[in-house]
Length: 116
Image (tube, rainbow, N blue to C red):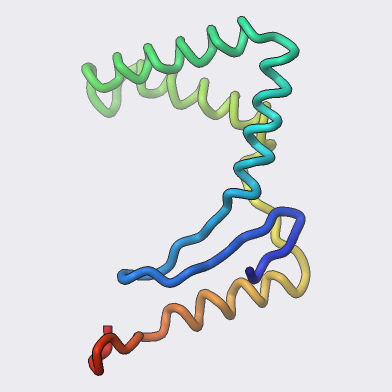
């Protein structure tokens, strides 16, 4: 765990690269979403249903349709409400620890005597 806070980030090797585990940050986002739902449950449900309907319409209309742009704008607004700018902050020495962990895992790995 190269990043211990404010949101923990784990980095694990995968056969084709790495996996970033940001579940701690996602937990905070979901708690924020739940708190928003507690304040106005029907409003949040309505917003999510509208996003789902726009997404279905976007699938039928194509990648540059009005529905795609409207859905993406609505999703961005919801992200801003529950997760600020959507970025996971990494501070101080943890930046270097994260970079080092990624660098180490980016090195070719040996699998059964051969480089992966």
